Amino acid sequence: MQLDDRKWTILKAIIKTYLETGEPVGSRTISKFPDLNLSSATIRNEMSDLEDMGLIIQPHTSSGRIPSDAGYRLYVDRLMDEKEAEVSQMKNMMIQRQDKLEMLLKQLVRYLAVNTNYATMITSPQYHRTRLKFIQLSIIDEGQILATVVTEGNVVKNRVIHIQHGLTHDEVLQLNIQLNSRLNGLTIEQINLDTIQKLKQEAGIHSNLISEVLDAVADAISKEEDLEVYTSGATNIFKYPELSSDTDKASGLIEAFEEKKPLLSLLSQNGCDEQEHGIQISIGRELKNENMEDCSVVTASYDLGDGVFGKIGIVGPKRMDYDKVVGILKSVTAQLDETYGRKESPADENGLSSGSKINDRGPEQDE
Image (cartoon, rainbow, N blue to C red):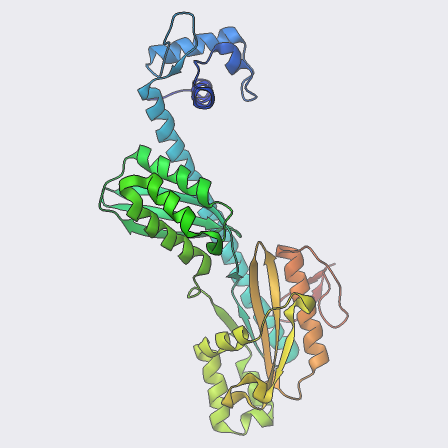
């Protein structure tokens, strides 16, 4: 059924008011809605048309109107379409943002390798103690639904869930309301047994579905297998005799940069502290890696806000220029924070200022 924008706005106002009050809704009440700039007479004419279309009914003479079953159906169907469109738009926006961030991190890791003459690595963002922002269940077919989970940082995760009992659109809408009212703003640690039990009671015969949705939530918040490590400058190792003279150790270092898993372990063992952007220096045997006993690793954390963090690491000989490396890392992390996160803009004489651009050739000042 096709409605023009004015009729649709009036119908939504009637339904929302009736849901809140349980009383028939009159034209004077509707005329107070901020989205409408219409006289009561005009609204009465539109309401008469909506009644002729079977979308609202007048339960008593001289009373206001209430939604009919057909009105509710149109409202629910359009609401689901609008929510799915919002989620789709959010997904597209986040894909674009993630693509741009990936390009920036790849560019940044090359910049660090060129400007330090050491091997460098950067992780993609990780999400720590992230809070849930939004859940949407959507019907795929009779036996499957799609659970879309959006967390702080606007990270979108999807999971297809197989169901034994088919769901109507009304049941999906009710489940979405229950899930979001109970879970929005919580971290995975805050979703306790009491919350889960209440959700399952409210879900009735679909209680098993709640467990699947909570698994999808936990997966979205804590999943780590999507973590990427971008590297550059591995061949810089051969510029330093103490790292290249032992062929086996040199091969082990190169292999670590190719496989990247050892680098993840290396970055995770260096904790993240908020002071000095979490800059830490590990020397020789402190790295607990036989192939890296002649190396030092300097790591720093970057903060993109909303509980989203990443790590940067620079690998070189124990005689690396620590002052230069720490200065560059402080400047780079400050610039990332300013652009994406905490809006700090300290300049540092050893590296990039807030007005610098990162490229493969080094810092380039804005004109």
